[in-house]
View 1 (tube, rainbow, N blue to C red):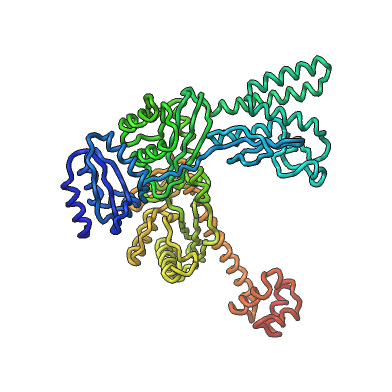
View 2: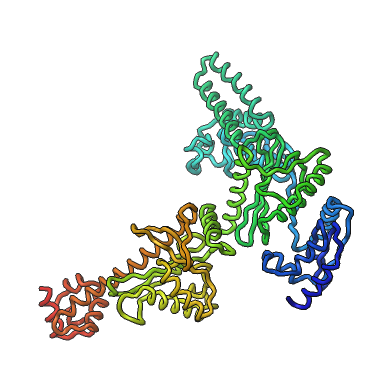
Length: 606
């Protein structure tokens, strides 16, 4: 522990055993973190003790602390209120901060023939009519999308009647989600009727639209306009289908917010589903760097979020927060009514939480350029192997030979759960002849990390330090590789992939014991895929070497053709077949050949 840390810890140990707020400052006096505590001495002293139990974010914050101040409060609740007020005022760097950039949303309806409907964030077009304002952009966008699909209105940028017949209709026409006025076969009256019904749907909702459309359908049927009645019937069914889809994301609790946190490496995402009248009416997500999946992180997020939003009577979380009772008291005061924080264990509410968390994971996956399935597999693998972070860059090695002949190795790389073929490498074992998989693996790993040291800063893929090494083999290979890495002072997690009698992945070994992974479906699938890929790559290289060797040996059977001349012939003609089909003059003209050797080769094949 350095001298500054010791001084800060000594000061922290003199703090009172009372609730309050602590304020961390850097060397220039700027506030970098504000927190609350039930017991000031206990909480603050934790920061300046051992750093091993802290997250990267906390360690970086502590490294920048030059001094701290504190304010004693009469209760934990007062500490929470004061903390929220100070954070809002100072916006410290290491606190979770959310921007209040939500604003309002509008539905824009253009006037005149061939009108258009769109979702907008402002209402500054004087030549249009606006519905709103609405608090939820999500609700407005969904409503406009539904109106387009139900009433088969275009959502493209074409202008009518200017663009009639200029291009073919788009995909929406063929999947019956647009009537394609761009084809020029739709009258303005027919279009405007559809448009008016869509506007009515947006103004009055699905039930009113169904009632009105049903009346129109009955009138058309009474007037023997059966085709028109059938079209209206289809529209009624479309409105009903939208209602059915909305009920999929619904809850028996009429007013609530569902909040879930997904983390990946140093990145986290809070997803919020907001329910009104039992239906999802809004959703938001917040990507936050340097957030850890902890009760304290949920506390901080709830405090910041509800300073910017209305508070519902119920908040449903994916995992517990740190001070649920104090938060409930604070939120109840803001809501003018009791607020309950819950963590469901089963039933409908648990399913909503799981769906919310899945969407949070999807947001992180999109940011990292990775699918949720791959993200899940890497997170599960990290958990099973006890890694500190997800292994985004995995290298795997396999040895291939036939009774010690043509001893080779293959190295494959999986980057963010996908094959990264640019970094694949092949090795021909050079240090000995014969079959010794452990010695072969030692040579390959040594050569690989010698290349790492040579290319550490020049952009070569050999210059990338892997997050994890997987060996196609058991305890022997693992022990051999660890000896080399220790000698070279390389620190990378290494595990062996153990196969069953059918050459399928059975377990993973750390050299001392086996780790069962078959019950972890995502991680098991990823490891099995890696093992199959490295085996395929190594054995393909081995077969190519054997084939080349066989070709050379057949040529060296010819008088006057040694190994050097055989290699030159294969390089020049490309294959045994081309050598066989070559005429005598072509053989004479080939590199390293003379007339006598050319005659011998020609006569051998003819």
